[in-house]
View 1: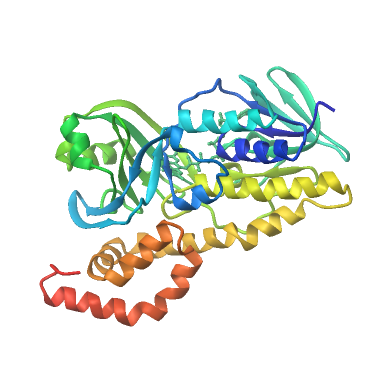
View 2 (view 1 turned 135 degrees about the vertical axis):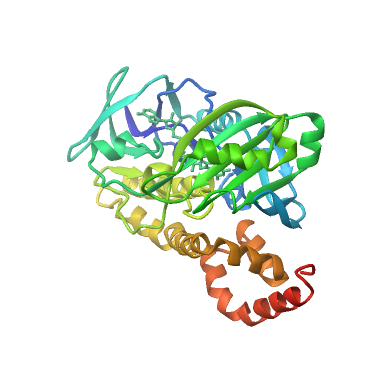
Length: 389
Ligand SMILES: Cc1cc2nc3c(=O)[nH]c(=O)nc-3n(C[C@H](O)[C@H](O)[C@H](O)COP(=O)(O)OP(=O)(O)OC[C@H]3O[C@@H](n4cnc5c(N)ncnc54)[C@H](O)[C@@H]3O)c2cc1C
């Protein structure tokens, strides 16, 4: 055997899983097709939920601490909400992912970068991995190779639903950066069945549109241009990179293990179908995967089925509730935005959910309880001509 565990993919899911296994003394090899640091289209928003699963302080790679969010509709500001000390930390993924994999390497994991996995095959006692640098064998395999996972395809996992996001890194003037400040902007009028975002970074803005549905994708380039044209501080901006990518629409009940292989993060389709947030679920699933693998390495009679079960009752449940919320909000985006703007109760519930002080499950369970107060606040707000929250 070349290793006890081979991890395919050095994104947050793979790096975290390798880190935890290496810390426990397991012989791990990470196979990554790119040379790190590599660019990855991503808003780079680390929610407090993601930070719960990071065992180290990410300050060295944080570009901006976002102190609040703005809700807009076709460029018009509806609501600005501030929450100390922050609602999210913003990173560039090339720096964040390279830093994370550095932690795994320091813990003892070996990284083979520039090594593309072509095919995997499982037998009763091992997994064989065919790569661009030769064939490797290990007792167990972790598929952390993202939404287009070769590991999932090789082992004939069924296709899962995905949405699509198009992101641009936009260089703006110092005034433009100042205008955005440390706020995350979400515009639910930018895309039918989705939203547009503006996230501040140290020297530019990350701007994108997310279509949160399977099937025929609308013209996202046109929607991105239209979205940007509504924000004066973006209009003169220079588009430095424009790149699209699929985002899993999580929430399905499905096995995430075979006898010797686990899928984690985007490869397991674990991103939320509402906002497309996936880093926290990548890290969370990595923790559960490492735990299951340590159990199997210690006791060969144990089964990786414990991993699928653990995902289903924790983050799987969250993703099912996020998908439910997405279906409702994207079917009625305007009433949803109006209700949010009019009700301070709903705003608190919502920001609690985004900042992980409340789960999606808790949010939807609390909603009927708070509904009379939310509707009353909405009515008062309307009776004041929609000017008071
Ligand atoms: C435009 C956009 C914006 C987003 N914004 C946010 C955000 O702000 N916040 C958030 O939480 N989430 C966001 N997401 C989702 C987030 O990027 C993903 O959920 C997250 O990257 C998942 O991490 P991962 O480790 O599972 O996979 P990835 O980060 O995709 O890592 C997979 C790794 O596997 C490697 N790989 C792939 N195939 C092979 C192969 N055959 N052999 C070897 N290596 C391979 C890849 O090179 C890559 O390094 C966004 C996604 C997109 C597309």
